[in-house]
Length: 86
Image (cartoon, rainbow, N blue to C red; front, top):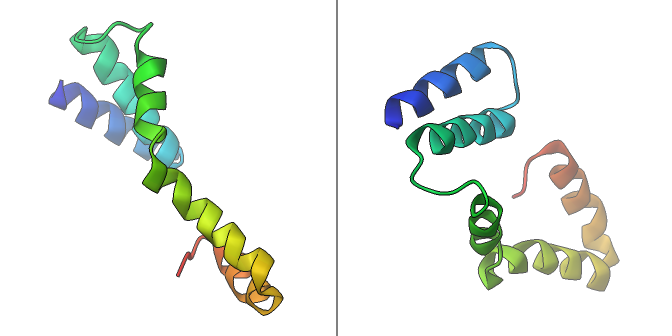
């Protein structure tokens, strides 16, 4: 499984795909090859990993800061749009 994951990751990365898409494709191919999890359960497992309070609280906390203090909006919104969070 690790070899398929690494090979697929490197091939997709050398093709010029974005890193997040490369990681998704590599994980999907590794799951398909291993057969350890049914493909019908994959969306359920993904949602279970995302559906946690700390993960959801971070973007909502940033949004709350921007709504409460309008002076903060310019600095944090521009840095978030550029990809720099802090």
